[in-house]
Length: 572
Ligand SMILES: *[C@@H]1O[C@H](CO)[C@@H](O)[C@H](O)[C@H]1NC(C)=O
Ligand SMILES: *[C@@H]1O[C@H](CO)[C@@H](O)[C@H](O)[C@H]1NC(C)=O
Ligand SMILES: *[C@@H]1O[C@H](CO)[C@@H](O)[C@H](O)[C@H]1NC(C)=O
Ligand SMILES: *[C@@H]1O[C@H](CO)[C@@H](O)[C@H](O)[C@H]1NC(C)=O
Ligand SMILES: *[C@@H]1O[C@H](CO)[C@@H](O)[C@H](O)[C@H]1NC(C)=O
Ligand SMILES: *[C@@H]1O[C@H](CO)[C@@H](O)[C@H](O)[C@H]1NC(C)=O
Ligand SMILES: *[C@@H]1O[C@H](CO)[C@@H](O)[C@H](O)[C@H]1NC(C)=O
Ligand SMILES: *[C@@H]1O[C@H](CO)[C@@H](O)[C@H](O)[C@H]1NC(C)=O
Ligand SMILES: *[C@@H]1O[C@H](CO)[C@@H](O)[C@H](O)[C@H]1NC(C)=O
Image (tube, rainbow, N blue to C red; front, side):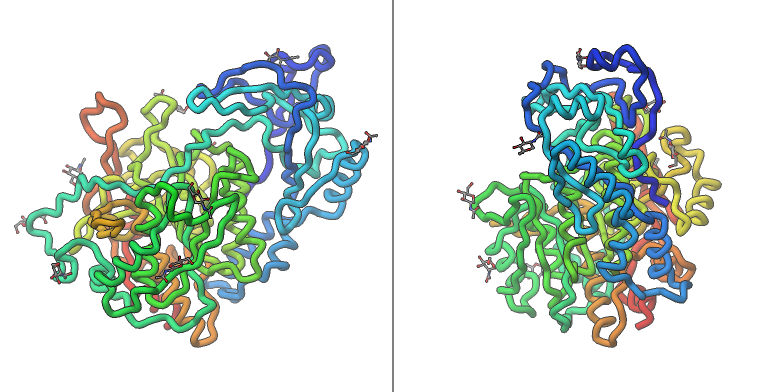
């Protein structure tokens, strides 16, 4: 169940606040004891500095949304596949009329004008000067500078919610959260360390030159016949730096998909000023993601949803919420999304912020969207706090996405050394994975015990080949990363959805309850060898990691699919 909302902290002012408030106790809604290391306090913010804040309004029935999500996604449910419409989802998450009324009248009373920032109206933005914000929220908005980039932000270390808003507003943003605007990274790596394909592991003939669309078609039995439904879109997340070259795609297709039209193209949707501007500098992520969706999901219309850096949701959300709100605003969003970008969970995203984005993915799931994400390439993750604990990644920590890990070698596949996996501190274990994760904990949980949260959601959910991908960007590169695995699984799901649509059936939607069902587990090929193994510090003699073992594990999840196994799961 998603818990929304900041902690209600009752405390005496733990640090200096405006004079007027020091003498009496203030019931703070959220507080922060320390400033993150990266930031330093530079002084009071000018009283007339204009602040752009937003209320996260209490939603009508967030638990009802999750129940509805399970109802339409659990293959044993009578409502399986009966996805909700945009307006049906919005009924769960729209604020109650009394919450809306309380906020509207409070804004009016203070001569502020509110703007809805999400399709359901559960986010409302408003602007006001620092002086007024300090008065209204018993806050001390001050200037802080990010010492690594020189970027200045205005934040407060505590704030109270006006009495009229209590029970109607979950939190005010941005207030006590500080983030690293450079936190979101792509997960492609050029290095292929650990690609120690044991001399005697067999390499299928189609993979002799590396991993190509034909190789993937061969090992996963993916058809090369084109999809037929033009309204069955596959969405790919683009972000700053992820420009995908049009001419590169053409050469890639000419060389590696000679059986299809090399001018097969994709459409671009820009959010937050993003565009697939061919003259901007680029890293390989965009080319990889586009070449391995168009090159694998034959005939499926691909839309590149490119998030720029003019984030409306600010550095704490880094456009993630803007993208989710864009998808939620569409009557017909792509039914499959793949995202090869992410970040460490606790270092960069506060819990309430993470919960809100994750809940947006739950809304998309209820509408029949499969949201696939690369688990990232950090192995168990090294907690920046002390390099001892492991750290989960976002968005894989969200129970309502399908997290894709990586494998190495062709036949049989073994765990890829950098496949991110582990357990989140932010979300309790969801019911669909309780059984397999308990089994893993009972048998293997003592390895690295204490370094991870044994009550958190475990990830990844499934995996696919992550090594030796041939990508063209003016020259040929061999890339590795879960960044490659997620587009491949997404392409397979999109091709299955195409066939479902042709027989008048709904798309697969949120995959996890199906994947973790008995038939789902049976349909996947378990990965039982290899491990994740990364070093956290230079003194690390022994790499840290988990092993791929029989059953679910926090390296490769439930295992690797084949197209036939997905077809069978879809009842085709
Ligand atoms: C506001 O917060 C800053 C940083 O914590 C502190 O130095 C300053 O004294 C505070 N101002 C007031 C008026 O309490
Ligand atoms: C309310 O806001 C408007 C425009 O923002 C301003 O002209 C007006 O003086 C304000 N009224 C009060 C009572 O603050
Ligand atoms: C390679 O083959 C040898 C001999 O058949 C076998 O003992 C060994 O386990 C194999 N290694 C791997 C990594 O499969
Ligand atoms: C491997 O590359 C060679 C040289 O470009 C090419 O002739 C051959 O067809 C390729 N094989 C496969 C299976 O891609
Ligand atoms: C694909 O679309 C882009 C943007 O519209 C265009 O610049 C490019 O030439 C197209 N590529 C092909 C092969 O038609
Ligand atoms: C693309 O980027 C270049 C280089 O920064 C810039 O000059 C140009 O205006 C951009 N084009 C568009 C359409 O944004
Ligand atoms: C490492 O940091 C985590 C998170 O702050 C903390 O829970 C844990 O106790 C620390 N472990 C050690 C050995 O310092
Ligand atoms: C571990 O996960 C549980 C369940 O989500 C959570 O309640 C707890 O706070 C987490 N522990 C830490 C140290 O974050
Ligand atoms: C992890 O896997 C590598 C090969 O990929 C192997 O050399 C190493 O011994 C394994 N580590 C453990 C702890 O099993």
